[in-house]
Length: 342
Image 1 (cartoon, rainbow, N blue to C red):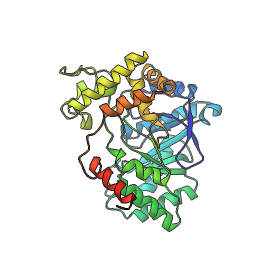
Image 2 (cartoon, rainbow, N blue to C red):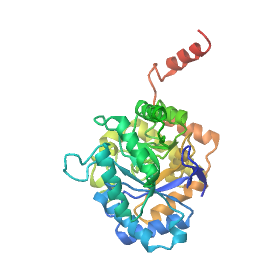
Image 3 (cartoon, rainbow, N blue to C red):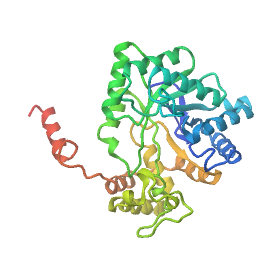
Image 4 (cartoon, rainbow, N blue to C red):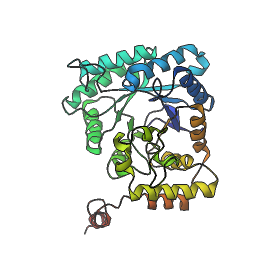
């Protein structure tokens, strides 16, 4: 396993992280324990959860696993969780206010059975709470020893930049990471979000690197997904929905991933995960695994290094086809002229 620093912090984490959204839902407690054991045995360190994952059950399972394992195992774990979304119908039961964040963090730490976590991430932007209130709260949590660092999740470029520069202006701790959706299918963050993160020295923790399973090779063009698959059971599943995501561009990407996989004698998932993990600014790619077998298959991506021609072919197949301005060819030309004084 490779290791990288958690954004601009000095904390080292594995280049592949374990996401625990399936714990308590698609993976029972025993299977979840096996997945955690295998991840750590394989050199993995960053374990990512959230209060809303299975309504707190995911954190509880991770907490019981931590309590059940010897210190030499649990000391390797860099523990990350998130808060922002509602866990109750209480009027102040969601958002990034001081009132909600403090209570959400305390509840997460109680479920995890720890006095402090390593990385606390706000799960999304809150347009109703002054950003200064959120940042001061997170800084106070660091000073109190409840968390080591904090990060952002699902923020746009301007939201991220505003948070970073406001923290600097106020003399507060700055965010070290951003957790965005990122895959060969979802590359829009390359236009503004990734440059903003790079400018701030933040590391990316991509979620859904397999595009909700589309890049694993489980689906075929013009053939409805098997009912036994996650998408087959719910074809209208959010951003992964069959009709929404099953575009010509998606199938072009799948074909390109399949070709690289066949040429290298590896799985499509390994190719897709390797591509994401080696993108600029990426610290650790979050793996979702319901079983140990799925985890083992995905962990093999850490040993795969794509060649420049392979990466170029995947880049071309997944190109977003940006319009002329500001992200397309005319926008690039305009910015080049500006730099040249034209």
